[in-house]
Image 1 (cartoon, rainbow, N blue to C red):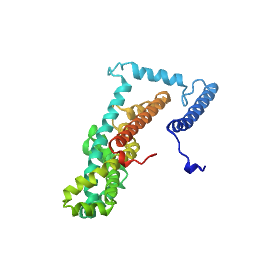
Image 2: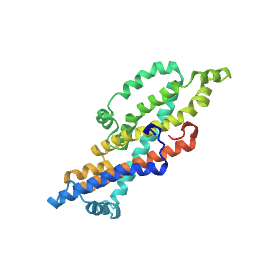
Image 3: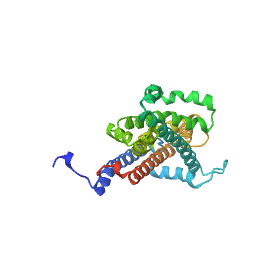
Image 4: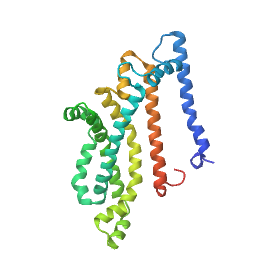
Amino acid sequence: MRWVNRSIGRGNALLLGAIPLGVLALTYLFAAASRHAANPSDKILPLPGAMAEAMAALVFEADPLSGQFLFWADTLASLSRLGMGLGIATFSALLVGLVLGALPPVRATFGPTVTAIAVIPPIALLPILFITFGLGETAKVALIVVGIAPFMIRDVAGHIAALPREQVVKALTLGASSWQLLLRVALPQAMPRLIQALRLSLGPAWVFLISAEAIAADVGLGYRIFLVRRYLAMDVILPYVAWIALLAVAIDFLLNRTSRAAFGWAHKAGH
């Protein structure tokens, strides 16, 4: 049987997916052990014991100055900013994407503007956002929104514009107004696409969040990583990076499960 025709079961898929991760972990352990054998004080590739010890102080011990458990305070701050940014971007993508996709005059008028905004590197706008909104939470959330909303809007709008013309004709033949067409025909089919666009935007959203926190923040996962880098504290940086990756995977998993549960008709078997 050719590989393109092979069907992978859930158990086998988990096993195959774990193999590269295991290889990476073993490679890191081998490289770290080799460096420490040559230089016991090496900080570039810390051993698991050193990372566990450094993280224990952040996770289980309150900071003497602030009284906070820094790891959890950083996580809560970053997730709050990320959640607000994703929420605003998702609502904007749904509202604007529906209108642009379903109404050709609106698409012709505002489509080029959305495209022009989408091609601007969001990081280049960071100084403008800080000048406009200050160094508080608003600028950080705004960077996430500006960074991912245009892409999501274009994706949703393109999906709605590409709906079969027969659906629109049938709805209009049955007496549907433009408003009813948006709610009854476009909206149901936009929702699974919106979740997919949100999943694809998670990576860039984390990039924009970490960038904003690195420049102007006093708490957050990005802030902590850039704070300890001056001390070459890889025993903190690597676990924080791994934690960010774990959070991103968990959010992606929840979005995928939500989409499948709410819009099962949009997911073909085996995908």
